[in-house]
Amino acid sequence: MGRILLVNPSYQNSYGDSIGSLVNPIFPVLSMATLAAVARANHHTVEVLDLSWKHYDTQDFTAKVQSFRPDIVGFTVLTPAMNQVKDMSIALKKISNRIISIAGGPHVSALPEVTLLESSIDAVVYGEGENTFRDIINGRKFSETPGLVFRDGSGGITTNTERAVIANLDDLPMPAWDVFDLELYARKTSRLFARKTPFVTAEFSRGCIYKCDFCASKLTMALGYRKKSPKRCAEEAAYMASLGIKEFMLADDIFTTDANWAKEVCREMVKRNNQVAWSCTNGIRVESSNQELFNLMRKAGCYRVAFGFESGNDEVLKNFGKGGKATLEKGLTAVKEAKQAKLETIGFFQIGLSSDTKETIDQTISYARKLDLHMFKFGVTIAFPGTKMFKDYRQKGLIRSYDWDHYHIYSGFDLFNHPQLSLAEIQDCVKRGYRLTTFRNPTFILRRFFRGLMNGDIFSDVIFFFRFVTSSYLRKKGTTKYEFHEEWPPCPLTHEACALRVREIS
Ligand code: B12
Ligand code: SF4
Image (cartoon, rainbow, N blue to C red; front, side, top):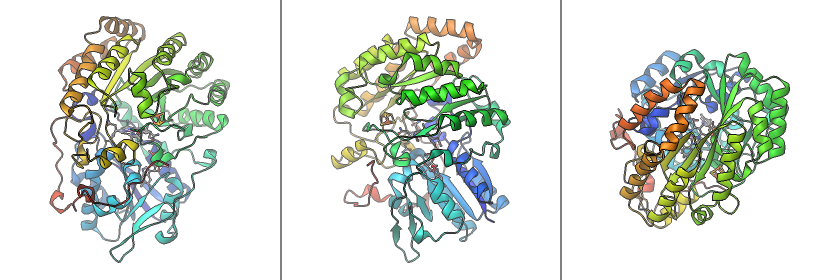
């Protein structure tokens, strides 16, 4: 049977030397664990090369390929990792032409043909990955595999039909967390991210029914909402506990939106005496706040929720697709209800949303200050490929750069012409947002101080505070060194007339 190497690229571009590095999100990645489980279930040998916490160095990849000698190498690709994948795909071809390289994840799902044209990758798995991956590793012909875009051998690219999503998520195998050295990660995960380690991500549901213009999640998990059965969710938590995992974060986009199902999940976890702490730190919608559900979540082991507030202006919320239901007022209620259930709260805010002006951003910062939160996250709104925002900006000729290294929310680079604001203004507002909500916000400092005293975080909080005040808010230097940079084919999108498909959320 085959030998498969799964690669998670370095996070250096998105988290290195910016405020993002404070909560450097180092933990085993779920896509790798679920794909590894599929490989094992099909009797293949699988290993993971996780470069997430390292500075990118092509040699780390080359050395692993030479020692493990895989038949297939699979890369997981978020946008700021795409340049690394170009580099590694070229390195791989220099080692052997016989090793097949495939890529999956949100970036390549949006730009499958572009990805093949700007790298040496053999095939792109677009959308949800498990079944397409299973077919490839089991040797199904590329031409017969739905959900695949591949080089056809005569210089062309073939795009196969879309693959239907997995209807029953209970059919997925349990993620193979043991392909990771969990003890190593236990030492690497930031205390700001998790209270207990080893820490992993888990998913109880997939997809989302909303269409926020900056959001890329449905490129992989599709529009709509699919859920595991409450019994399976509780089994998954028990399975994690059996492996020594102490905490997980739900990757679900809208875990609380179907409140009845979410309550059942929690009841099932309580029934099974769940011992693993968990959080909803991918963000939930404010209007889905529900006191009974929050109380049950707390009982089932959840201790923290993040809310995607995004803006402090109801019109801006409506313009990007979240408003109407998710209002400022609902946001205030959501925080109160979470607090009542003794859940910690994090707030996500985006600066430079498509209809933002200086005035609306000021309102966002004032609104954030009003909320009784334990942590704030401000980021530059980025038009990621495949989103409505990317389409609009591209149509209006507002995109200035396709250097994927700089596509991340801590970006200090000139990527777009925002319709109303200069990039310098947006970046300045991100910094102001952080300053005014944290160390120039006495109520926040007091709140955090008492929280630290209560749960023993005071020492780590002091360290993070000093790192916070001395860190640069955004990443301004591009320091990634690529061994084969000169051999990269040019990105076809840089030609304004490029008619290549950008797969969009439908
Ligand atoms: C957990 C998470 C993270 C984690 C882990 C990321 C990772 N490598 O998986 C951390 C915190 C590190 C992270 C960071 C970022 N994230 Co994030 N993240 C998520 C989140 C919430 C869940 C991902 C997840 O685990 N899903 C469950 C697994 C099973 O699904 P999956 O990862 O998509 O994998 C499936 C398919 O994509 C495919 N697949 C994936 N990889 C591969 C590889 C192969 C070989 C194959 C065959 C298939 C395949 O098959 C898998 C199974 O179906 C998603 C939101 C979402 N709902 O997807 C955002 C999301 C992926 N993140 C996003 C963004 C913007 C970022 C950042 C750029 C933010 C920033 N700081 O600027 C960074 C980039 C980090 C980097 N690589 O440099 C965007 C994607 C934008 C884009 N075009 O890349 C998303 C979709 C959020 C959104 N709503 O728009 N993120
Ligand atoms: S931001 Fe959240 S609610 Fe909006 S589309 Fe994305 S996942 Fe859905």
